[in-house]
Length: 478
Image (cartoon, rainbow, N blue to C red):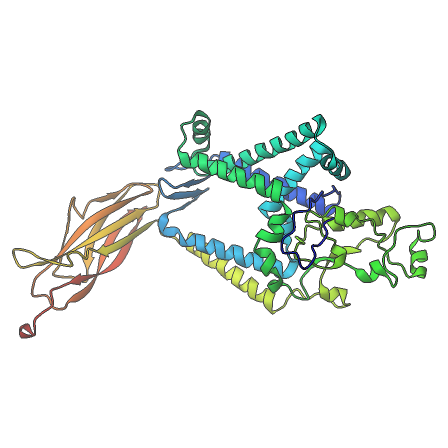
């Protein structure tokens, strides 16, 4: 159990926390989520995925070729706003869940929680249960302590290296990159990323642990803004647990609930089990605290004790402040409705953008230096840089023309605008020259580049607006 520091002390050295193991429905739920999350994280880079063009890895972040491959979805540089949409969805989902269930994300899904659970499991398997670990730390250094501590840290380092290595494999072809890493042929960033992720995993999950949640995580600081009286949090029912005379241990004269109620003693037998299982070392009986990550292990611990003495469960449970005051929780309220509307709107917009994303796009940029050139025959020439992106899985033949410049002519620096070929999942950059007679009216004439392609049986037509710049006409010319 961690003790609070005196108010006049600015810094306090870390008090070690030795979480005790516990069994129960929330612990089983956490193990299930952890198993699923680890399975996805560690196995996904090895999942193969057949594509007509591109790598056969299901999830690959190909920085060299500027492609993110997510199963059948290929994200190109111009689709980077999808990332913004995904981040908005993640934020709205976090706010929505927090408004209803408190820090459920922290207790069940956060990477820090998942990896810390595994590190604590390793520590318990090697060093023993809570009392054994405490005795080991207090004992002097000897063969037993050296072996157990060394084995613990060695396994921690192996898990950290596996974590960093797996993260690196998402950024290259996994089998090939793994071979390069072990033969010394991988690029330096691959080694740097692996070592950095391994080091941070080892420190955060093995050495810092609850300090990350208490001091480093910003979510713990602003979560209270999203809490209200209807938010479900892990709560100790003090009225039941304390009675009128407070909590008390079991004794010969206070073994049954009837005896305790007659004495004014609550149902809490002050066993401390709820404190011993807490990964952040708090006492939930002191009320909601910023260190609480809503992992619900204290609920399992208390339910275990209540079952052993034959009393009803629920002394510690998920409840809202309104329920504790005798009311009924309102799930539908202005805040949750607002979060839900924003969440589903963001999901809808991102889904629509992905589903209706065109396989072809074109961008045009006028060359500004020089803005125009006067040719020997008096015609005015503007130059443009065009980029045509083909996101499909087949080579496309296209034609380029002008719309809005009936007297204009089009020429490419190289090639024929009537026979443009864009390879599958590739782009084509062109320097385009547009020429107009010198007697054309206007200084900035709007027009469109028109790209016509054949996609199956239906042609695809793209239009990109541009402006043709003419020399400024002198007043005498009007």
